[in-house]
Image 1: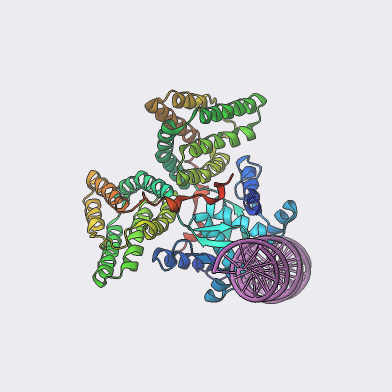
Image 2: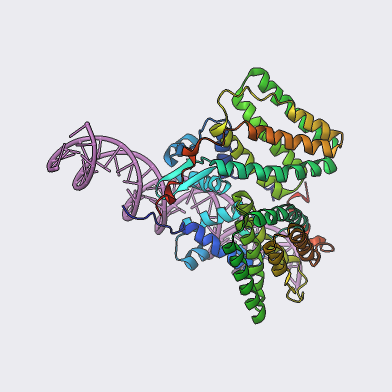
Amino acid sequence: METTSATKPAIEQIAERITDAVMEHRLPPGIKLVEEKLASAFGVSRTKIRQALTLLAQEGLVTLHPNRGAFVTRPTASEARDLFATRRLVEPEIVRCVISRASELDIARLREHLQQEDAARAEGDRRRIIRLSGRFHMLLAELAGNSFIQKLMAELCPLTCLIIALYDAPQTPACPEDEHSRIVDAIAAQDEATAIHLMLHHLKHIECELKLDAMPSRDIHWESLYG
Amino acid sequence: METTSATKPAIEQIAERITDAVMEHRLPPGIKLVEEKLASAFGVSRTKIRQALTLLAQEGLVTLHPNRGAFVTRPTASEARDLFATRRLVEPEIVRCVISRASELDIARLREHLQQEDAARAEGDRRRIIRLSGRFHMLLAELAGNSFIQKLMAELCPLTCLIIALYDAPQTPACPEDEHSRIVDAIAAQDEATAIHLMLHHLKHIECELKLDAMPSRDIHWESLYG
DNA sequence: TCTGTATAGATTGTATGCAATATTTTAAAA
DNA sequence: TTTTAAAATATTGCATACAATCTATACAGA
């Protein structure tokens, strides 16, 4: 009897790599994901790719059009607002849970992540900054210890990256974010009120930099236009 | 050019029928779902069944064991507590949204649903009662108008049914639930404070009837016991 | 009786092939 | 030149077949 292989199912690995590519804006919203191309890129057959795509579709990162294929989702402005409303509801709870549960080691993991973000910012690697910013919130959710909230945030964060790709002013100066580090400080100090306040401020900050209005063309619902 | 067929993808239909069976406790927690059996039951090939199963696994209703197959999930007591914590966080927000958005027609839909629940209760059809009780909360989430929250509740409600199947005292007298109808009354009256209070009370009520303690044997995590 | 091993059977994992559908290209007509 | 129609190409949807893996049974030895 051997050790139960801890290797993740290959399908999830594929989905994860596609997710990373989306988070880094290397796969822009709306782009078509052709099964055969992905299959040869990953060195597997279409069967696995299909399963990975249905998985990503379930997460909302990919949209499946019957008989037409898979596309990276283009969230509407309305969906973007719903997403941030959900995050404003959930992330304060995450902060509460982390403060009440986190060990020294957890705090250390957070600080280590902050260092990675700093490094990316120092290099001006905007793509990595965005991905790491998302992963910061996913790490917080993980430390909160509620698997349902963790899973929800694992879906919302990549989608947030997509929304930023679509609606962020192109020349937003790479966010002056010591915001993450201040949140970690408040958590480490067990200062719940401050931590929650900073988190909500941070979310508002991200949302407000988006140009969610004045782009009605993006929101046209072609399917229902004529009937 | 014809109308884009509004027929749901067949895979989702299969997943939905399996979900209903789970909600009605016709597929008990832990049971194995053999692909071939399902394939012939639904009259399709294993390929589609597999995709439906990965979808259900993503929702958490089914657990996939590599090379061993798919099983209806057996939530642990700890997961059950996390689930209710999540619902206590989300459902008050749902109530708020519904109160501020719901039209007369939406309220009518809620009342119609209550009638179905009454009918099931009058017939003593416990299975249908449980499924409809779950669907009541899913309907509320739908009316709240936030797709992310709606999707989350669409996962949590079937799981709640599973938890009830596992942990509910077998002879719990079919819940004396005018609780749903009182929630709808408060919503219709736009009485936010009361509606939220009733909702939280309702959730506590469900959770407290569960025997989440004193059954440690269910929670043993065999995989991590020795290393 | 119990334990361990070998064999047979069942089930999952994956690739491949073909039919159905969509997209692009080409050519013809306005 | 623009529009329309038809053929050619590309892509998805699905079922099936085979290999890999797991499970159950049978049997030998302690």
